[in-house]
Length: 252
View 1 (tube, rainbow, N blue to C red):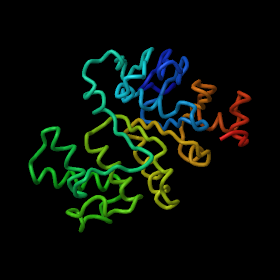
View 2: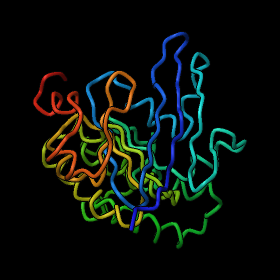
View 3: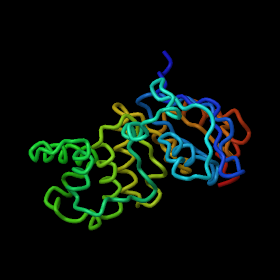
């Protein structure tokens, strides 16, 4: 039985001023799986990720054409952008904790959605910190500023904060590129645990990482999707010459 797509993208084109960044993208992203966007720097991976929660609209010079369906709703026509973004937790290359305490970072998302009861907040903050494998490291330091954490801990804090708004999708843009190997492994292990409850779209150019965690691979080059499919099949038997060249290290 085929995977049910959580996200379906049809004929997506993105223009930055007169330069076309994404060209006729047609892909399906399965529900409760890890889909990895692979390709060399500048091939459009991050732009595609930003298109999924309409962050491209923050730049007036960007024009988007096509359709992006999430649960059969075309989000490019939806008027409530905030509701769309609530469905998605975003993890960037470098962690950006809010300038407040460790506790405050997690409670923030809960409070803005109207949940303010102190006992409830305490339980949920603990819950999400545990989900990000961070609770045991910070449970006695919750009032300390988030900036006091190591970069690896800050990235897991940002993951916990993203989960606290009850998203359905996690968008991760090279989330381990600034981390040490141990912290990177912790994030990868957490993604493997979360895949059963969330749809994860991960941008990386690290082949080893993609091989470890991907269920589906989408390989991009110069704004186009060159090849997509089951991760094992693509890594073991790529069909396109550009994909084969990339796997052999012909370009970065």
